[in-house]
Length: 133
Image (cartoon, one colour):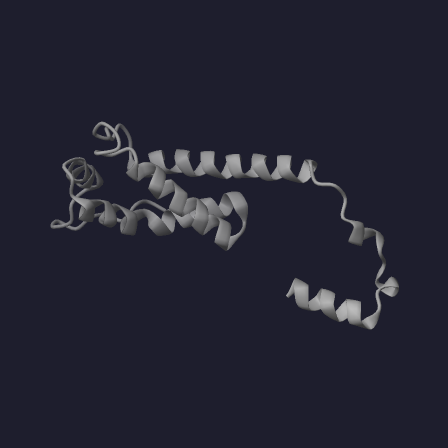
């Protein structure tokens, strides 16, 4: 889906980036509102989970915000905003996937996985169900 076209009175992404570089925090809020839903959709395609997609979107915009003054020199927009955002989303999603794979590879097998359902007493089963919920 292409980015929404700004109306004749809406600033372009490039104009908003210039305003953020000049210290206008409200311009970054406009960029966020303009691209948030698209970022959520892209992130979801990587992770297939609403909560994780929201986390990735948040991390993406925090990463981008740190690219502006006073944290860094002025951000230079050399491509479309969504081209930049896609790269960040992809990087964050793949990094998370690698971390999860590494963490799962180092986990010992669960002792509970060796216990069959018939081996649990009714109290244990109820406690287990409450803990899982």
